Image 1: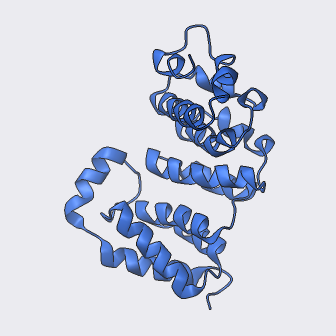
Image 2: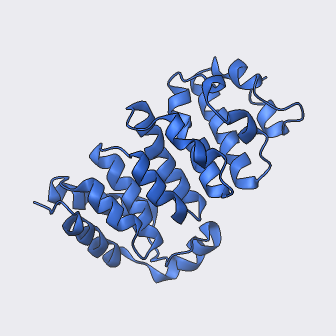
Length: 217
């Protein structure tokens, strides 16, 4: 079941999203995330469930193609569903997909959902750090944040941050969305893998924000 172009699976997801839409919560979502696309008004748990049910009904066929259709769709929730569908299917991002998707990033939640997919692809690896370096030096705060969030799983699993290009520059980045991602990176990885603390300490700038330095004492 499901066409190779992903249209059938994407259509099923979209139908479920329309059924779940709650116009009364749209304003709250817009206020907290400020996405550029239309907001349907769907909370995360039912959104994940809708993706899971659609994928199960289609047998997971065409997940990557369907995710691409959804990412380039009309609503904020479709972008989130695209990432959820990829992770649920076990299929991984490629550098071509990242290059196609990253220009549309405009809110923290989609960045963080996609960042989880990036991290899994780096672990596989269907992606390499060298293929993602352009994100780290991008003028877009969202693309720089994506690079940072994508490092969480690999560093937690043993990747030495000193061997990762651009980490030192990003730790010195004062842009709010990037700085918050760096706090997340350090807090999560040092908690799960304490040996990452001294590694990060060597990369911190002399006048690093206290939010970072207290994590690697």
